[in-house]
Image (cartoon, helix red, strand yellow):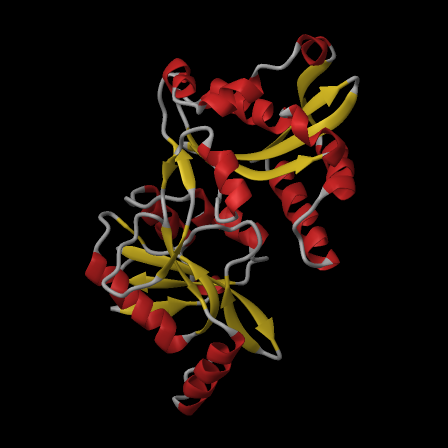
Length: 303
């Protein structure tokens, strides 16, 4: 039996135990991660006594709940001891029957009988850095061979949030609205305060030219953001920073590139020779959302 629990009704100990022992474990489904990204606006669908769980983040518009993966939360979905296609279908059906869903992302382990759209993600699994580096594309290896002048005048440093914030404000791209930039900075600051997030900067002549933000939890280090000064985009500072984090951690951690749907980003990530890990998504148009809203209203399914 699947039941819906509001935030205040969740047994977070049982929820965490289910996540930790699940085949699909993802840091993005943890309470801390969702509390920050969804601002504690999330329900949980639970099968029996937390044998399987599915977090459901939402936004509220005119008291209407609209399911929407929050900014920086790439994958959620069903979590259970063993991924079960029929169980996943039951959760999918419950979600679509009882919620107004705009955007929901499952995880790469979830399989379905239904045909769902997918998005791309890339992962590097733990291993010897020497072996991982050997698989890099010839182009990526060339990019990482900095010339003598750059080598003599550059450095990689871990920096504090205030320094990172200044650089992000000056160089962030790809966000549609000012509100998104504010939400991004608020999220990064919260993760930094909770000690999940680190910022690494590439300095050239004592100025930051590139920066990355990485989130660490349990067995995964995720690339939550890459920020570049356009004047130095060809210097390969971003590649150097990512390679640095991989070198320092790949023996013990999965490196999660957190995306790869844009052709330019996919090409960049593929240079590190990660494994492609597609994940199922629901992404309804406004027209479909209106139709689903009418259907839910007729069945009295809004809560």
